[in-house]
Length: 566
Image (cartoon, rainbow, N blue to C red; front, side, top):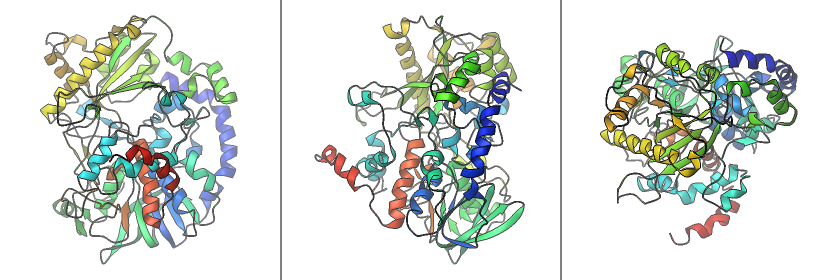
């Protein structure tokens, strides 16, 4: 067992016992027996699903939220912001891997990227790295121009504001500020802990964990319920009003295809009757990144020793303060690097994330998971340091598109994920500009104060091109570029006549009544940022669409002056 996880398990024993006592009380509503029908059935208790369930149950309608994973209270690592990586490659993650890649992945086992997704109440909001980015206003205005009417920045900003509790005063004073994160009072603020758990007592809301949805029940092109497997029993539960899929960018398209909604030729391969021939899973957009590590002398960054120090843990456990209240992503930079007159000057194409982690042995073995080959890990261990930081030049809006496909008609068989990274030459050029921008950043006087030294990763000189040339970095991208958990768009929204769209502007699945998708899979295009905040916004807006209400009038009036010229 890796050192960090083994030590943390020992440190968390006391808290685990405390959490288990609390869960006896807090999770009691999760143990109610399932009924035969509900007004709304939401599939997926992740980032969007938990928010949507909390909103739809505000009235008298009965709501069932089904989640394949267990309660978040059963994992003592979840509330600690610094411990996200300890949840990866555990039963609380779906542990998906991509298919072998053609143009990338030379440094990965079988050229397959690791695609973590939370299989726990709260989904990725319970397992991810807390980043909160709305994206650029131009992202949403583009959605609207392309046919997703009602999703311009003017339309969605009030829904962001509704869910936010911004506590960073520097935001109103400067273009630079601390990282915006879903952390409150030193603890992870997931969609469960900050939205759902406080309303679990509602008599019209039921949450069923360890409940795997196998398909949507459809009769005469109308969704009438879901089929689920719980406690090894196959059950059918019916929806009086709607079925809503909020299972995420991998599982929502999988469930649709298992239900007969998707590319007809693909479904027929598995003997699945076609209910609606739609481009489900065809628009996978993923933000590719590469890690640039710099070693420094000053002991000012995360190390495995600090993360496992009992004093730091005791401080967090007692007061929710200290180093464990940070996720490690301490800063981000968005920049437009392309000399294009077709996009606004402040529309970014590159995102640089700053992680204040050293590359010591414990971090290498137990930190972010990428499915590196054993010899890559061995080389990193040989070149481990005691203090340093990482910069992640990241492709904001990939031109390369991938797919999600079912690989079996068995709902327990993982779908096929094909990211198709770097299929476009434009994406390679953008990544090269991102690397150069990161190098310029490190060369600034502020960074040079800590004397950063770049740590090469091309052990054995596997990239034989001249060091730091564009050819060298293209080779490095082929070997070491990675998925950093920010994919979207596999059930794209669009206008009724848009052949690329799976759902319409009201998130209704085309051709099937009483069925919607509400999660990051409906995003039309990738945004400048992490999709997490967008998934919450989508749920907030969907709740109003479904109920035909307007709950954001206060925030709309608050920001109306920003749009008076448009």
